[in-house]
Image (cartoon, rainbow, N blue to C red; front, top):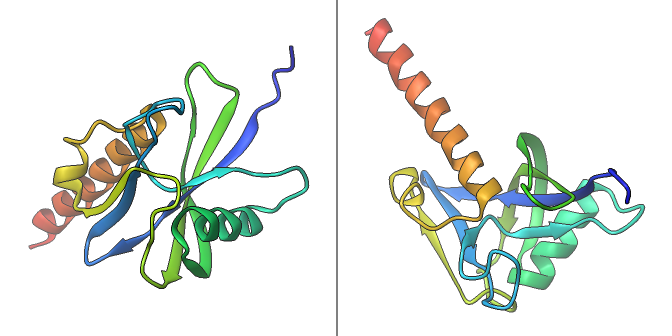
Length: 140
């Protein structure tokens, strides 16, 4: 068995301090859990190409820009390495694969049943926010 990791991209789409997440279909791994949209890269596909394809297929969104990777996590119990990438999009998301979607602030995201790697990413976002707030308090 190969130890090689399969790259997965997860799009971090935010508006007004809220993040777009979608609920995985029942029949898939981590079914009914919430996730940042995305998926496995095809062989020889760049991160940019993969995000554009996945968001077009899953949510009918057009990608305006693919920015930096904010966080990377192993998917425990699977050969996937998930990169959470900041993405700007245009259009109104339409579900084609997920059972539902929503825009949530961090205080709500931490309460949702998230897929494990997505939960790690949200913990990371919360710690970054708390660190910023702490620095702001020290400087005021």
